[in-house]
Length: 252
Image 1: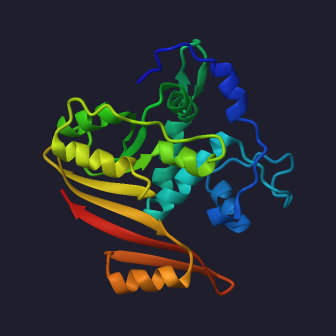
Image 2: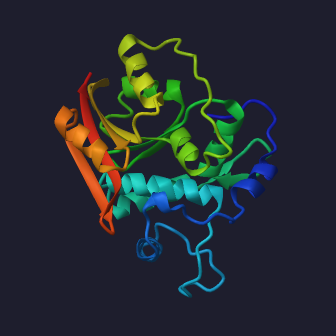
């Protein structure tokens, strides 16, 4: 998967690696948790004096990776698998200017420039794929991707950098069958933070999506009354509801 037009990768390298952002409170990541992830190798400590208690500042690239960690943790992916994913996503990738950049940075640049969707796929064999729409369904049909977790990189960027990024308008469904279009529309919607897809013999059989709800007791009451969920999770801080998520499972 490569970008076809001329891209100023060096400018993106500067912009995506400038550490100037503190974590926003809604990310729900404590300093203790951050330090734990640093100790286990999920994050790098970029502070001049590591362990000093100074504020962590993150680059856009690091914020997106942090969002991926958070979502993989919610999906109960082990630390070892996440470290393996990190190794793959930060492996140097040769760009169009013949210089190497972390793979995650390259694909973020690709999203900004090529106006397309990109998915990070982690399968049950601990293999990592970064693919666009057509590659995603082609690999499923050929059996290269079977049971897997799919992270929508565009949404990770939107969540971390919503002040500077908007969703591209995807219109190209050529070559996809009705089931694939249905799944693609679900993936591309703003409804689910992340999804899990189960396949059998190259056919998608089940989709499981996790959706963040409004953070108040009224929305929780409506959710309980509607019964429109298979599982839900509520997190509180100092007596206030800070996160409500529900899991919806669909047979395909």
